[in-house]
Length: 144
Image 1: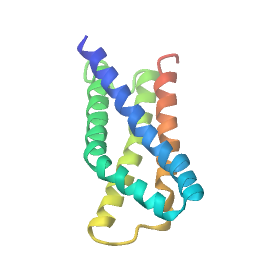
Image 2: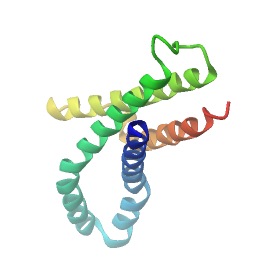
Image 3: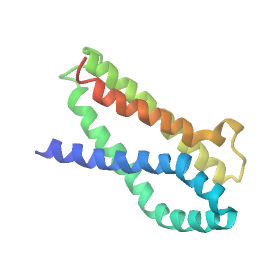
Image 4: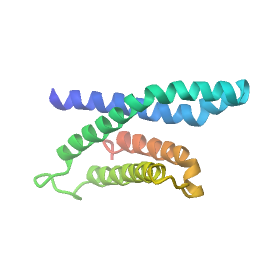
């Protein structure tokens, strides 16, 4: 029962995480194009004001619940690279780490007031693609 509860929490956090990135890539630019920069700025101010409180908690819960579930399939008893499920799980961890490193780099650049490299201008697009890959692997790994 405990594991099922963690799965549900993890799934809800993943939906919120991927949903926000989706909105940032596809919805918010459409608002900016249709209603102009002022409306867009007001909307983003309201979203960021609320999101700065909620989003970090969602991300931390997502990572923590994922780590908890990770230990069910990869541990000293089950092994580390013995099954295809474990291999896919490690691939998911690698993709998650790419997203985490991008977030850390972006926060670091904001703290030191340095412009991130141009590659990071599209970080949410990369994070969205990686997230779709992570979700796909999550579903695929139990069938292989």
